[in-house]
Length: 84
Image 1 (spheres, helix red, strand yellow):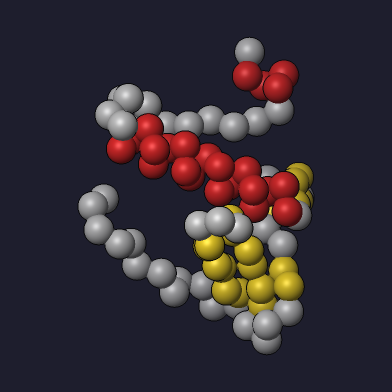
Image 2 (tube, one colour):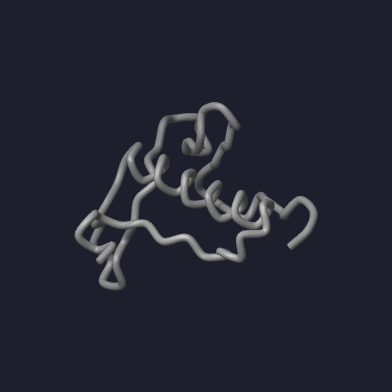
């Protein structure tokens, strides 16, 4: 995907990315919100600033790998025990 991807697909929240701050979320009314990871049963399994930071880092790692031509177009993240 070369070019700038389209945004504006959310109906209840606003996501912001700042190159030196990472990702943040807020409601349409301007209140702070948190990113979360929800399993297939609807249970929140991770939430908060750590999720936003990890999503940002995984996105940057994938993009940087693409730019430097490493061939690593997929980046995985998880607890240290999951890396085995």
